Length: 237
Image (cartoon, rainbow, N blue to C red; front, top):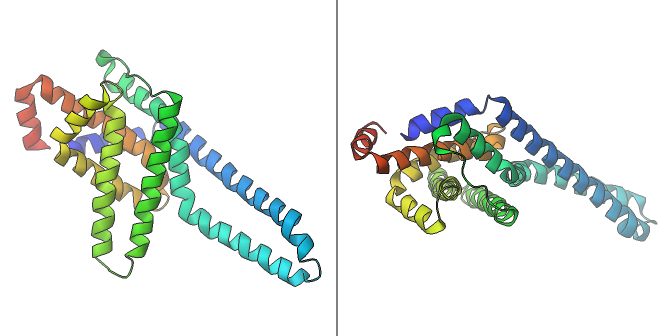
C-alpha cells in the first residue's frame, strides 16, 4: 500500500501541474534570497559603511564575509525555505491528485489561508530542526543517520497525513485514523525522509509528500469501507 502510494506520487512529479508548483516554489525562494542579499547590502551601506569609512579594507572584508555567510546559509536553508513557499500551494497539489485519481469522491476542502500558512511554517520548522539535530550528531556516525530518519519519518508522516486527511474529515477523526495506522504512516514518512535526504531532489519534498499522503489516505479510507480489501492490502503493503 505505502510502496504503491509512493510510486504514484513519484509519477505525479513529472506532470505539468506538479512542475508548475515546484518551479513557482523554487522561483519565489530564489527571489527571497536575492531580496535578502539586497536588504543586507542596503543595511550595510546605510549603517556600517559610514562608521568604517576610515578603514575601507575592513568594510570590504565584512561585506565579503556577510556575502559568504549568506551563500552558506542559502545552501542550508534552500530546502526549508522552498518547503515553506511550496506549503502555500499544497492544496492545489492535493486537489489535482484527488480529481485525477479519485473523481468519484470529489475534491476535499482546502485549508483556509491562516491554517495553510501555519502548516507551512510548522513544516519548515520541522525540517530546520531535523537538520540541526543531524548536524549536532555528525560526530556519531550511524546513530545520526538513524535518528535523522526516525525523527523526520515520524514528523513528516504525521504532518502530511494530517494535511491529506483533514481535507475530508475533522481534526479529531483525522487524528484517530492516523493513530490507528501509525505503522503505515511512519513507513510513508521514512520514504519522505529518504526523499528529503537527496540533494536537489529534496526541493520537491513537499509536493511528493503531499501526493503520497493523499494516495495513502485514500487507500486507508478504502480499508475502512471494505474489510476484505483491507486484509489483502495489509498483506501486500
